[in-house]
Length: 103
Ligand code: SF4
Image (cartoon, rainbow, N blue to C red; front, side, top):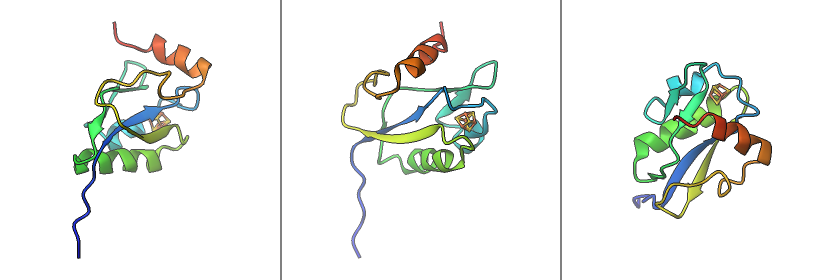
């Protein structure tokens, strides 16, 4: 039996067009998701190490548990914050996402 070693980083992405804002993801992955005053998820764009198994499993749990399939766990190579362009979100989604950035 070998040990599975997870390398690299991941981020949890939300598609704001699909999201209904009921906030189930904040219950499923509280260490990754916070809610704004309307109940929409605020997720850090800082990549999380795959070795952080608790966060990774929470992210996958939230991805599977999102009733609108608005969440996606994306593997990234860069430890730097990932922009919406790099996330390959549609243009409309990027515009909505920018509106929700904290001041
Ligand atoms: S669980 Fe999905 S649909 Fe619900 S708030 Fe989170 S991302 Fe949006």
